[in-house]
Length: 340
Image: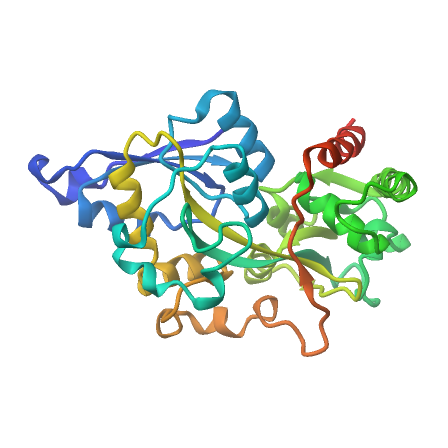
């Protein structure tokens, strides 16, 4: 796990201005340090950030004893619901967060945190796949590119090291429910993934962009912002909106139970709901903010990127479903089998 310490408060403020610290558990490569510096300059709060590369890794770490060490984390939509169900989240009131009214209306009453009592929206986007068009020039309108690849791409595919997304994309490809209990459907999913794995070169989430830029992979599951970044770094990649569908997600900043610096956590969450600050994350990460008023602060390349503007005939995306405990164990077994 990466760890870095932001000490900008020492540069911008006298010791009397310091107001303690904030401990953040965050996705890799997902917040500009300049924005963290700005928060420290405005508040005097020293920020420590640890990173993770999947929702499941974050959850496992918190349950293994890290809860109580961090103030906020940044889980995806389905993981917010899981964490809430497992008693890992604290609650707040809108009165504690002056910028609460900046949350875009469609992201307030969300199914994973109805009314927003434990979380705020951070960024949202999609998960699909991208293909290097120098290597493969054929149609990329199907998830079969990943799960039943053409000869040009065999052995050149990176799969995300993320259980939720791999199993959800696999289910979407097969046209089966995400939380199926049907033995035949689960068997088909397991067998399809094991067969597809033979054509994959690697599993990786934090390097999903880098392997496309370096040429170590010619195609791969990827977050739309990572694909945009790969393109900006010179890779001739195209992001796909496959006919079977794709994943839509929203990452959220959550207030963790037993946060050692609760007040500072709320200040940070409120800071991120300011349109200029939300836009700074969008410009850096190349996704989409869940806050109103950001357009005036967005880079033109972000506004017009194909990764953030699906074609009119693109199918609808799907959120990752939260399964009941018994069903989840079935999917855990499929994932364990795939990762052997």
